[in-house]
Structure formats: C-alpha cells, structure tokens
Amino acid sequence: NNMALAYEDEGDYKRAEAYYKRALAIMEGLRPGSILELALTWINLAVLYEKWGQEEEIDRCLAQAAEGFHSNEVAHDAYYAFNCRKSAATFGHFGYFRLDRELTEEAERIYAAARRESGKYEG
Image (cartoon, rainbow, N blue to C red):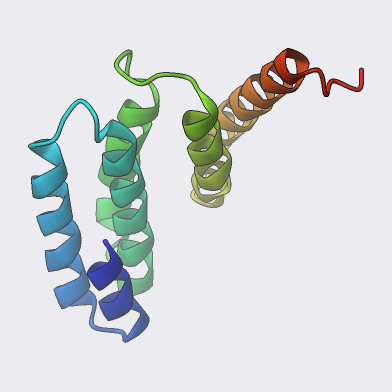
C-alpha cells in the first residue's frame, strides 16, 4: 500500500495500480485478519481510478470495500471505529451518502460506548 501511494503521488498510476493489486493478493492470504486492510486498499484503489480517469472501476472497488466493513468476521471495536471514521468521507465523496452516514454513526456509537466504559462519559 505504501509503495502504491508513493507511485500514485508521483503520477505513475499504472505502477500504483500494480502495487495495490499486489497488496490485495497478499492480504487475501491473511484473511480473516486483514479484512479491514483489504477494505482500505479497495478504497485507495477507487481514489486512484478517479485520479486516473477510470471511473468505470470505482463502483466495483467501493462495493468490495463496503463488503469488508459489513463482514461478520470483523470486530466492531476501536480499530473498526477508527477505520469507519477514516473511510466514511471517501464513500460520501463518491456519492455513497448512506454508507458515509452509517460508518460515521457506527464509529460514534463505538466511541461513545468506550467513553461510558472508561467513566469519561459527559452525557
């Protein structure tokens, strides 16, 4: 992913795509522990395709990413909440407003529960 992002920043979209696909292949072998990382890579790939002018690939990538966030194999913990919050706006950017709202609300629910458990709840 980091190599792909570096090539993307340099404008070498073809090489960035190759590295994203390589990252996806590696993480597929690490399932189920890599489901959120897979989702984030699919999101990164969607962003790359937008920059590259290959809009026809974006929906497929975002569908794969959404599948990761909806997986029953993913714990809804602080790490999940962090990734929900980090990814929600990108879904919204591409017009997936319901998913943007769903991920944002889920992150807030998880964080509020953590605050209550820690005794730092202000409400």
